[in-house]
Image (tube, rainbow, N blue to C red; front, side, top):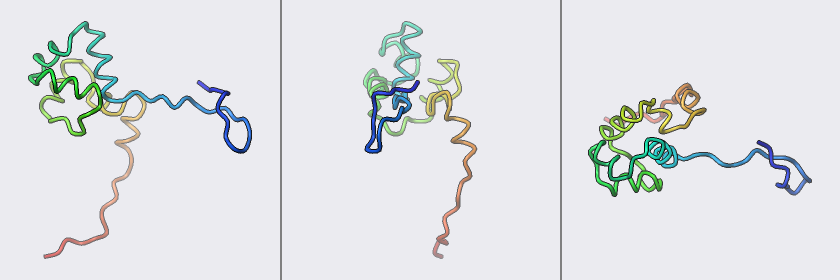
Length: 106
């Protein structure tokens, strides 16, 4: 959706809305769609209520692998969707990985 009320120094141009859903927002949305409280989700995944709360507020940088995989299975979704959203998962995975030019010492 283009919003024409944003302007830059060169004149009036329409820009795409900058709203991108975060991982925490996706987790919260899927939890609420199922009618679960944070405590219920925590019990189903095997973590604390506090952990779920932190996930949803995007205060956790590295979710532990096992709870994360349980979360994806519980939500019946691809783990990539949880992390990247609907449009970025495949694109992020298809980017080439560049090896470091530094050689390990030894």
